Length: 434
Image (tube, rainbow, N blue to C red):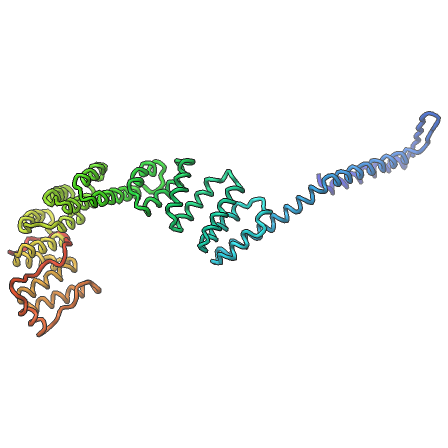
């Protein structure tokens, strides 16, 4: 009930009593032992009211005296809280402005008097981290843990995140491993472990972590699938470094069956087989994979395989023209294989067909070099120019013109035929003339 309502009720009660007493003042006789007291009823009511008021004031005074210290403490606590809030607000503004040192100073000013120092400590730790003061950062993290032991996991997560950002990978690993023992299924812990294993190149641990990442939906399923492919590509590369074909095959066996049709993994495995001297097996693997699942990545990998019999390899690849007659990148690869096999007519036909279908810039460079060798400098220069205009800034250099080009062609000995500029291969096209 509000004070105003109480006042009006009291006033109404007093008015009612006053009206009653004005009609009849009343009479009161009090007797005790040999003493008697006579007075009017109105006076008695006034005395009782005065006594009640005095008693109320005395009790209130005693109560305030007993709680005075607590009230002073409460007022001081509220003032400290207001000052802490002001310091926090000022510190956050300084953080937003990029003034890390000033932010840290404001955030830690009077922090020991704050009831909730945890946000101040954590933000101050971030400010110290951004200044490269890792010792102060770790001290703030420790104080944050002490200020609220129940928030240990959240505080340690921030510590691991800052360590990771500061490239303190070993320290971050120790923090995250300890966190995983405390919270083995926490998605934030798993996400940071995933990032850390990537940076450390710890592919085996990341492979073992993948099932848990999926169960806890740490990332988008498509991204996790892409991550799984990257992990197994790295493990294949790692196994190949030993130079042991058995170890490489063991790494391939460890690849889950649904991933063994992925063109990136098949291509990597084939090229790594070649590095361990298993070229025939690599060619067979890629040929089968191309027939089963045509892709540009597999085609490029096939073109990168070194072959002692480029003519045989060319014949094998020409079978794909029936199904992929409009693939300019296959034409480029066939042109390069023809150059290796010294089949100039076929090479020219494939490269011209590739260029005619606006194929890769690489085709223009290969065709230009072949035309130079065939003593057709004018056409070679035109092909070069078309290639440069197709892709500005390409790695094909503008060839010499006029007498310089003619002199260059005449000076080329017949025993130095043009060679493909690289092992890159692209898509197929139509059957060229021989």
